[in-house]
Image 1 (cartoon, rainbow, N blue to C red):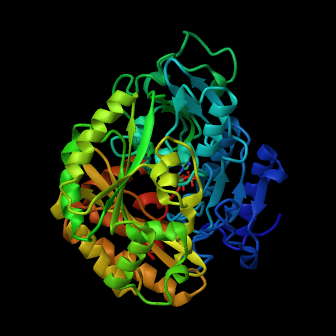
Image 2 (cartoon, rainbow, N blue to C red):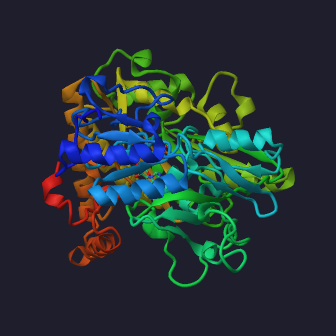
Length: 556
Ligand code: ADP
């Protein structure tokens, strides 16, 4: 057996070899890759991403590193691997597609964990139900795959999907991480709200179905294997079933490996029109957000719109060097010049109207009138802009057509890599301006340009600050790491917390959610230690460490 460069903690080479030998009996050698040499780590690209480590590393490339990558072929394979991992006390890190870009890729929080690449083989669309407007998916179905499935099966004029900015991630993986989307089914704030029913392999290897899935479709023993048992007819229609609602503990959690998930799809609304409203001055953000709040709450703004900083749009259309020879952070005059050159505002609001034409017209009238209160605001439909523009990209995203164009802003600097800092903000002008100015100040101190966007849920905004750094430059990485650590503490002092984060920051952020002597973490740890006494599923995920791997030993 090859020897991994990074063994799991407290594990001898011999124990690991015995573990792998048993796993090999389950999945075959062809589904096991041992990570033997650091020199062989490749950062790859978005479409060809490694499962071994984080390609956007802000600490040493080999810090968040797998010992081996295993690709189970079926749910029983996963169950068998979980049994074996318990026997040898080997930590597993489940991933679906493993892109998780800006948050750590497929890499494990605990160095030497075995990464489970579920997406290689478990990648079927199990069902699309038109009457119920839902799909049942395995972990390896990407947004692009699901979209293509609807097209190939002549269903895309009936049902729409909801996509994030990039279409290559797993629908299931993104949903359990509570990622956002931009159609009306982007959720009141995220995809999680639109899932319905799950199947999960528990840390002891048992298979569980949540919600209505716990009620057998027909009484008695299943005819075939458990994981192929047809689900209850209402499994994807009513999320809760009966009794305590457990799905939440599997989202951003480490209590199970999710093997199936129901997703609600959006019935074709009968018409669509995307639009852009350019907002000229930096300080107009205040007025814009106060205009947006009531419209969004009333659902006059039907989808999850975004208020994007000019440099995010500029980054989609060119590198920094394309616009300027300035190396350090751009000043206001330079940013204004870029906005002028692109015919955009300092902030740019992308939304869409859904429904038959008379409905869209009525909504557009209200929206236009409200935004006209901002002096100099301008209104565009995609057909009004001839050159390549972000509106043309958003036009697709806002109707659930996957794209890959938003990758471009990562190349704002040479050898670009990125990290997301994602605090939640109230939908008020005061809060948005304060959060913007607090984050922008620190971004400049780190010598970087502020690139960011506010995605507007019904009652909050996910403020996504994109920290772009040069992955080949140790100083650039150090600054990016300093920046995000500092921002977490700055924001916590204002009572702001993040919705999701990179591996390197999980403990720090979990530590800010510390009301009443950390009762939330103590509760999570109690569940973790009870359900997973050997701590084999994703130790350290989102700051939840099992007692077998004490947090203090794995501090960064
Ligand atoms: P994506 O490719 O959509 O970005 P990933 O597959 O990388 O998503 O998943 C993101 C994170 O979600 C993983 O790092 C892991 O922590 C968790 N995760 C993904 N899939 C599963 C799963 N099937 N079961 C449990 N946790 C998962």
